[in-house]
Image (cartoon, rainbow, N blue to C red):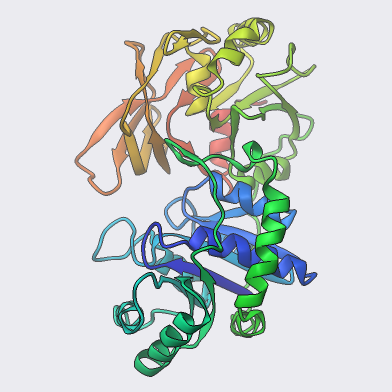
Length: 432
């Protein structure tokens, strides 16, 4: 069984609805496999906290259709997929490329449209009708009505939706049934920074179970056809390779399938904390420093001089390292004046606006091209040579340089998926 929750637009409440549905299903005793459409690191953290298992990204820019099928075949009682932005929003308005709609269509997943009913009744049905008829194969199987004032308001919306669209409503959430989570410049704070998350979710899920028609949702989810098998790609042989992976509140933006791919290649992943640990793990063959919020934890990273010194020495000796976005910032000389590792000849500063945002294609100095995405407020000041030419997917005429190489270290702002591109593993961690 699987179901996808899509929104009429950003801010309609689909994240709250998805998390509460996951939690309500868990309270029924079901094993819920969570997923997120698009390049998101924050929502999957909340999914994992609620479902007790990793959440996987389904991204039609970064991965091929076989990878989508492979990921959705993970065993569970039900897969719940949270969409991104509005249902049809993606790379461009004509092709609907990289939209939640495209992900639903490629995976043959029934869709629940999360509709914000604030101040409306029949007008909500008009919105639903527009989504239902924009394409000939919208895939919308039902409507989850959000932000109603109560049962009477929901009854009006349900009647209008049934009359004008023929679609069933699968319950509602009131304006009070929401999860108050603080935000910062990349969106919500992370689940790691929300220690009281589970008790709050459990109470909210009990309330949601009273207003959502869980049986109807399960019936719609069971209509999803079984997906054909998609075997894992042939991986390089990295058996015996110990990879140190930075993981703490400053560095935790990793695609779960990237970590899985490294294990499928035979790597042993050894996690460590640049915030708390004084030393790197012993006998490492490589390092992986992902994205996160090093700017938020800059003072603590600076204070851990022992880790910075040991890491810089290891990189100077040629330990292979791949650093991504926040990892790049950490390996530079400073972030807004706070001293960092000092291995790369660059200084990072935080800005008030996004420096880069969206899907890109990266081409390295050897001609290897691969899809990626960027999303950061940081700017890097450096005159060091670069290894990447980055091309914006929505504007192919717009390019810029990135990717800093030194010894066996490669660091870049672009976030990369290599779960079905094993050649990138060899590019990032030279071996043998």
